[in-house]
Image (cartoon, rainbow, N blue to C red; front, side, top):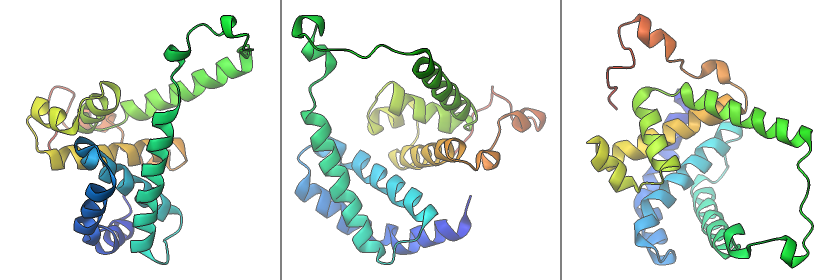
Length: 192
């Protein structure tokens, strides 16, 4: 983990949490999504800052929030494939999946599975329940008997480690294999 980046994040971004939540409550109508929005904003800011620190962190934080909300609104307006139904009856040409595209998709899926498998146990559980089973943050916390804040931290950690594995720096991703050698195998639960 990059301790200087973590210190920067705590000193320049997390100090605006109250203002950010006020802004999100004012602008986003779905109250049950506020914590997830905040978490996703933090992940985006952290990842971007890992590449280049913004010159005006507070402005960057709120711009990221605006962009994320705009992205979510745009996505909600996209018609799902199920709603469209049968493409042939619409005379829409559907791309054939070439062997190269199929193989490329399989490679990406394999890398994602590898990154997911490298996550620490608790982190992997939280990411699975939140992102795959699509449970709310509160439901994940209740199911695992942890606080919602711990769920937030584990999601951020998981997304950061998966991104590191995908975009280089995979060597820094903690492997679960050494845990078994140290007596911290799969049967034991990790804590925050």
